View 1: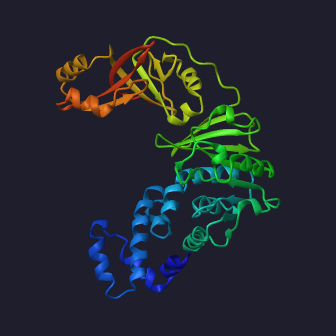
View 2: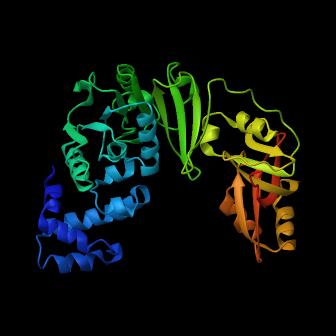
Length: 394
């Protein structure tokens, strides 16, 4: 299964990969024809495939690492983004972890971040090809002294000599993504048992995991990167019962073991705050509302409103100019009057699709605006405004 990787690790394979670093996939057929004149056809195919995967991987790993690493199609799709893996590694390091078993380690994305934090890692995966790729990545990034790769069933690995485990179960089946934790591979119940067997652990789960499914002994953390929720993890050995929202790349982290009750509903004020997705998933909107001295615009909608601007790393602020009942004709007239040509459409609690709205209102002009399609005290509404500048107090 690892023949393709072995070929790429050869001098000829390395030369091919170097020549394809800036390769345009649109020219792949011509490149394949040209390269096959002087190289083995199978090696050319493997190098072209790897070049495509490296280009895809830049978004997760950055160019400096992606063009030194090796990937499989599933590996690129399933690997943890470097920013998230680095954050998790830093948490393990702060807990005093020195040796960690990375179960279901994949191509080594998490192991790399852990090793760079100075943690000795045993990376376990049952796929021979995936293990070969993980070994190649450890070597390519000069981390082989800290990363040992074992091809095995994770259930057969003795973790008793380790300070911590990290388990990243596969959440896809032959029919696509699964939302049943017991359909994970390995099942979530097994992963939780492995987590409880060592002093510290983290188990990666789907961001949509119901709060009632989180074990009482675990801390649940939701992580976003530049506003996009990337993952959730259940931590053991930290703060049982706590919920946490961590926002990358800045690292702002909101955590509580006793979530506040829902905020009060109040009329839309001058400012509207859109909480980060990790805050919403962690059910910490009330904490943000309290810090802002704000309330909700609707009991079921996670928008916070205030009359005065206040800085927060946990939500994006907008200044609202108009609060209107939902109506496309009225919105179109208002946008035409204000010469709005760049329209950002946000929705929460509305069935209207942003592209359909843009098509119908036909924004034209030099100005920009943001419209929120939502509910205000139960009524379909439109809020018009734009990003607010909210500075930290001096």
